[in-house]
Length: 247
Image (cartoon, rainbow, N blue to C red; front, side, top):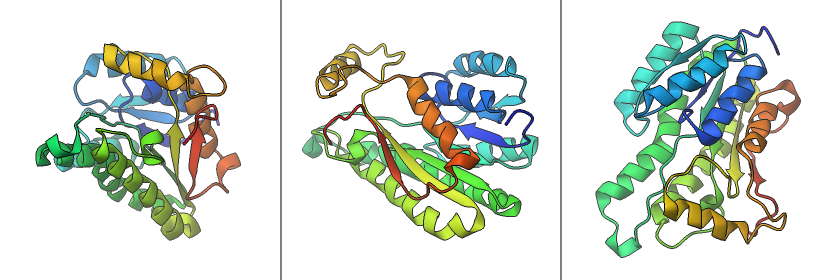
């Protein structure tokens, strides 16, 4: 797709899966909008890598868990590229709290970042997709959307909601050339510094029949397929990429 005029926005694209997706779509020829909530330097570093692939790139910082920031991200993106053709809702938080110890603020924060952001950004970008007669919406679930985990009731609910959203959007906008799908990665190796998260991934690896953690590039390949003409008949689906892990 080198030379395309299409543009992709990837939330949470300063590292890990978001970074891999941005670089893969840039290699496909998409212009790129990068997003992060705090670490602009990380996003700028990815932007430098994207520029080497001979496409246009901008950074639109903002906390997607705030509707005002989502509106700002939409404004910056459309102001520069006129429309967004591929929306990848990757940014997420996964705090852990036992249900009876979970307060309303934490519950609301998780739903805002992991679910409501996908709604707010789709509301901002779908009109442009409709005008172009083409679009892709790609959400992320994770295994929390398939079965619940102790201490992550809010994450499971939010990710189930993101799954429901793509099923509804796929039906409503599929006839208009816009597909919507959700990817559920298994345990993926990445730039994790939290010892608890690293230990959790090692534990989860034991449940993967293939016997290893996934790579961010493997997730990015599926995003590439869904964003291409070859993926145009995939719509309203949850796609698991988890090495056969039990769900």
